[in-house]
View (spheres, rainbow, N blue to C red):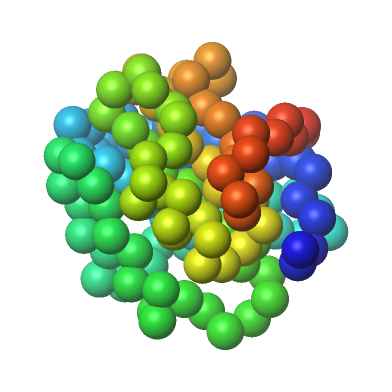
Amino acid sequence: MAKSVTAITSKVLELMFAAAKDTHPREFACVLRAEEGVITEILLVPGTLSGERSAILHLHMLPIDLSVVGSAHSHPTPNAVPSRADLNLFSRFGPLHIIIGYPYTMDTWKAYTRDGSEVKIEVV
């Protein structure tokens, strides 16, 4: 596994919640940047497509640096469990991925490892 991600800033979570609400009922998607194991920033990937059933990230557009540690996206339903397509994306890059379920609050997001196992990370 690449870098270990143990936390996310509350500011980044709030930004993702706001973006998911703004995009609803379409899915919002971004990649996550971390410093010293803490997610501190989201990056919007050029060419990302957002639809009611999926969002498509163009992985060839990711930055080349090693600070990108995974992805985050919303589900326009309360279900924050990864789909088969989500698991495929998770396996392609980064050690950590986040799904934010509707209504996009502190109670409706989950983090997953590259293999789709749920993991708890600290909010700082």
